Length: 114
Length: 114
DNA sequence: GGAACATACCTTGTACCTCTAGGTATAATA
DNA sequence: TATTATACCTAGAGGTACAAGGTATGTTCC
Image 1 (tube, chains in turn blue, green, brown, red):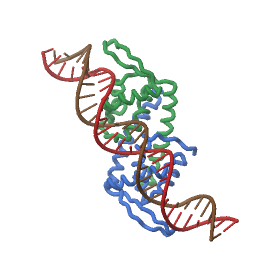
Image 2 (tube, helix red, strand yellow; image 1 turned 180 degrees about the vertical axis):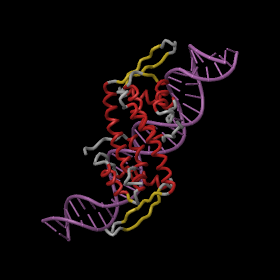
Image 3 (cartoon, helix red, strand yellow; image 1 turned 90 degrees about the vertical axis):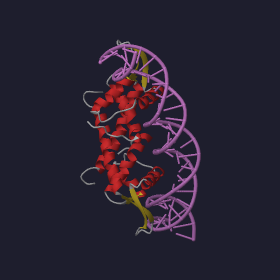
Image 4 (cartoon, chains in turn purple, yellow, green, cyan; image 1 turned 30 degrees about the horizontal axis):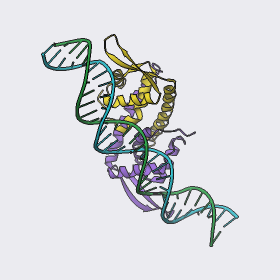
């Protein structure tokens, strides 16, 4: 529940897989992604918008997501992002790397160490 | 077994907790830490020495580890690193952050998503 | 009508970090 | 003697987050 501070390095490492993962669940837009991160983490993670938008732009530039401006029923203009085939492949790679590191870290955190 | 490519962002995020974790198991030195990472990861992770040494210097500068030059029985001079009290506290924080992010990521990777 | 808040997007500048590609030196092995 | 393994270090290029700022509109309440 309480907020967990995340170093900028961990932020940098997790932002791409996090966004790609959320978009793997269906299209979304910046503001909603921010809320999703907060929700999925149980309030532990709270991203700033100033950090997210450059990430989305980079993902778009790299072709991992496609973007489309649309006006919602609420009347607001939103930029909807959708995962591309390339983005799906990148997500799979990111997951593999993440687990390789996670498994190694948790091994040192296991019963034999600490 | 096969080598897993790790992005520089993930490298940056995991290097400090990885080194601190290894040192939590007892003092060590650069070259041995490199081998430990390879061993613990089952050959999946292979750090370069040019990447590790700046990390160790930063940890020392920040007071998370203490360093001591000694000559081993082999006759070689080695710089031995040891976890400080401050380093232990940092490791605990890094673990908390890591798990907050990991749990959130794996939630999006769970049965409901993808 | 007006104030306040939530929604929704964006950019600039500083500071920091990795990685590549080099370098030095010694002990052990072939 | 040559090669490999051990053991450490640094400079420069390129890339990233974060704070702090900005714009604009829909909703709610008085």
